[in-house]
Amino acid sequence: MTIAADLYDEQNNSMFSPKRVCVMDAAGHLGSALVHRLLLRGYSVHAAFQNHDEMQCFKRKYGCGNVDDSKSKKLICFHADPLDYHSIVDALKGCCGLFYSFETPYDYPTYDESMGEMEVRAAHNVMEACAQTDTLNKVVFTSSATAVLWGSRKKDQHDTPVASDSHSFVDERDWTDINFCKKYKLWHGLSKTQAEKAAWALAMDRGVSMVSINGGLLIHPDLNIREPYLKGAAEMYEDGVFVAVDLKFLVDAHMCVFEDVSSYGRYLCFNRVINSSKDATTLANMLLPPSASSETQSLEDDMVYEQRISNKKLNKLMLGFDTGLEVQVN
Image 1: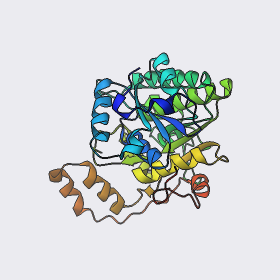
Image 2: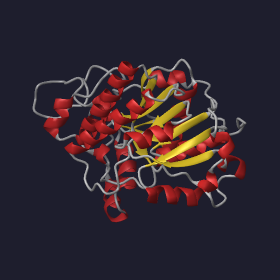
Image 3: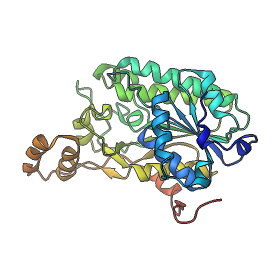
């Protein structure tokens, strides 16, 4: 365990706080945004990182006037490898909640079938550590829409990837078919499905209160065509289940399901549906370099595919949710 001394309030860390939470992995787009939002809402945050370089970079960011002194004192940085059970236990000490997301290690060059094994091991370690943390009340487990939509309802028996039934909606009650993903090498869907199922099994077995967020493609400045989520994008698009989510909306959803005592189970999370040529062109211009994306602007196809995926459960929960960006909790 490594503690950032310049961001450490020893007196506050000596006792359990009902507003002390852990975020792992805090280095990713979602994790770092969650840390910032939690601090704004008055939480004390254990920010957990897979490696020391990420942690040092984060400390420099938050030590350069980006967070005022009163909030920086509520931030503690930990090195917590998701494959190292004991480091996770250390990061969770004294916390009432955990926001967990798995980020692909920087030294892992490809996203292949073995990534599923790594994510399952990480999910197992995290949930075991949660079960051993007496102060922990709730876990928000970040999964993906790809753990919902692949092969869950097949239109026919033709040998082509199909994401959904042409006459039914997909929602959080559906699970991606693991064998389907193996057959078509949909490694992102395979990994997220296996890891989430492992987490749910352990949560139920160990009595850990857990809620999952199954987010669409996360829109962020570094997004590119190599994003593993995009494998099978054409099929998702034609089946009306290609969804994306803005970072702010994704963070809001995490905060809402954590703070709302009525939240339960899984929540599909998206605020963009990519089902028209205009949507596809906009996304292509984001993903591709300027020289390549300019070619997509000549598309004249005005086809709009019927949306066949629903996030009504989350939208209902988030009605009236206060982001807390104006009024901060002390």
